[in-house]
Image (cartoon, rainbow, N blue to C red):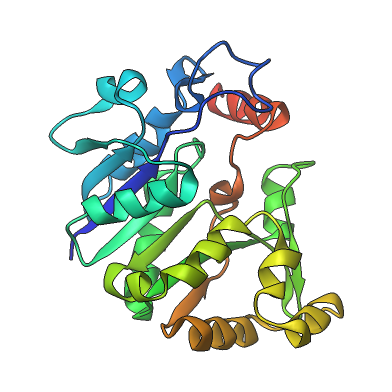
Length: 249
């Protein structure tokens, strides 16, 4: 079963990375002699399950990466609109949506996530890595963590969706994407009771799956113990230094 991929690469370099690189677009920032976006593109190309890769971003920045496998999609106004545009362009029943700033992700990691997502039968799958694994692989790395009854976790920068199900649930899905960097805001969407249990660290992964499923009228699944590379996105200078160091080895 082929799965199209959507790579979000439309962000201008006007944030915390602007002093670390002269590139106008973040996707083109140099890491170990290569533009950052080429790492995830190459990883996706090497996965047999991946069909077409839809690269969402401006032509002036990304046209050099197009090929028979990579199709350019003009961006909209902001992240949420770019996700919608990418999913609308994809022609397969399911799609894998990826950030362009995850250069440590390999084809093996993508293939493992895709296989487990498809086997789950879920409509929406989100990769999760333990804090333990992240700090073991990348000591001192700063990530956003959530503590549940089973342990402390961080989310990845890609997700698997069954397009027909997500389209029906888009209003709530938009909020979840918007709040992805703020666990408190994300859990608050689920109601005050969940926020209290989150504060007390008594929520379970199953609790969250059931609640999100009932709100969105779909079947979500957290894919646990995914390689921590999916959580390393380059959005600040220390992340850039880490990835340059790792990929120069």
